[in-house]
Length: 255
Image (cartoon, rainbow, N blue to C red; front, side, top):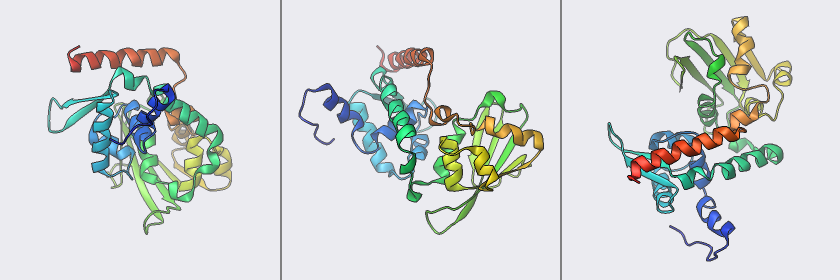
């Protein structure tokens, strides 16, 4: 673990936890509810697995993460301690700041279709999706990483579960979404108006007319950026999360 700032100042002590590169993103994934190594890794695709393992150990030493062996299968499950859950307002405040001041800071090299799909997967408005299996296909153009300039993804929603894959699952597609990756990312983040993107042809929906009308609500494409970013506005929700994390921590730690 790298040296701290050598100050007793509370800001310095907090920065020792969230100031290291990748730590805020690792904490973001855990605050989203990801507990397993592979799930956390998918949320930070440019972070090496070795570094992720190191960071998780460091966060555990700092008292914000606790780990234990999975009840079934190999590997560990990682949970936030009450101190880790208490970092939620800080991480969310970073998102709020970027939403207001950072829209111009998304460069082409920041675009990542896999990360976008992973982000949408965990923030689908399941209460509004029809009960039957629903399949969305995303055809993205304008990819900037690697040699590919376009790529397709599939999102399958069924029984209140959401799965995304790069290989065609073989199900009938209900809605096809063709979009420029940069424009769609900006729409999902709330920086660009969906109707404007549709008018300009940068985003296009095809399929059952009734379902097409509902897709923006399912994926929070109408400017509900707080949901897309995972920023909760309800104090009751935050208090409930604190109680839940504290109970799990006490169970695992034997407190």
